[in-house]
Length: 248
Image (cartoon, rainbow, N blue to C red; front, side, top):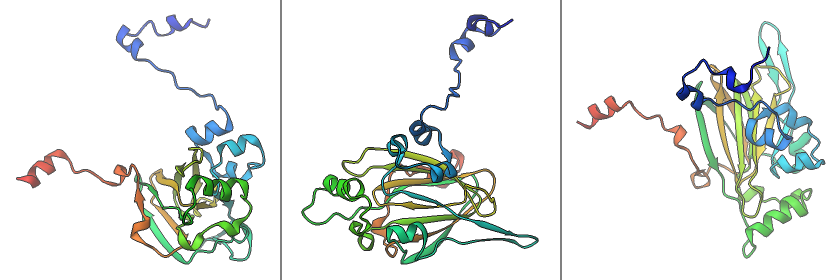
């Protein structure tokens, strides 16, 4: 026989009962799942961005597109990143001028970091973003790729959680959280991700495997384009006993 909530925990001390909390397993709306819980990248690839619920959750300018990974038995795997004249990058008119790679050790994270948007002289930033990403969102020629850093990210090993936060002036402060699989984990979560300037991004390594990523940028590397927000996770503090020893 089912017990009432009061009877269920009556075998615990009162202090333990007072400290109890129950996890909320309800999925909530699509926007809540994307912003708070996190979803597989494949759900975002498959989402109909014309619907109101997806528009509510999606950060304008962000692109997430599927990739095909081909296993080569006894040798490894093969996967393309992108083709200049096909697919999402061709559609939005973005082709990186610099490519780089990064390795993140298991159980580490980087970010949040952000790149500054380029606003034409004499134009209000909020009005500019509304024009480029809302009123004329399909007019990709308005985007200032040569003057601001856009990132195109691919993951070739490991599993990553990506967290994006839109902090552009006048734009709704949306958050997107999703899981991307590296090429060695062949799945529908093998995707490429485009991150616009003005959108803060962080990456957290999932599991016990190092993460290897390859990314292209619309401009060559410039240190002044790297802004840091809430980036303490990147600083591994030494044990207090070590700090005391070193300070002697």
